[in-house]
Length: 112
Image (tube, rainbow, N blue to C red; front, side, top):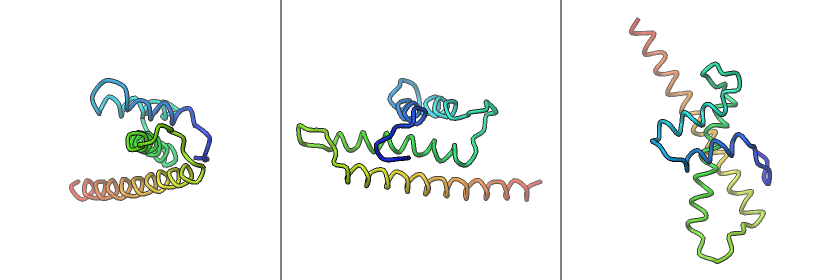
């Protein structure tokens, strides 16, 4: 998304990482927040948002845990670089997810 702005659903999905429970329940909670029409599926944009949400939270936690100064402020250029890295990561993850599932779909078709 836009640097300096927060998408409420992405924030909720990201924060679900910090909640109790196993990984599967956390993923389900995030999925449900983004499943706008309640049909138990995400379109490509929603899936990318799903990946971006988790990557944003993970990068933020990683950055804050690696910060040694007393100040947790992040420069505008550093925020932009982090946002760009998350966006590229979400695109990369989405691309591999789609590629993997196309292969699984083909394999399933060949079996039938």
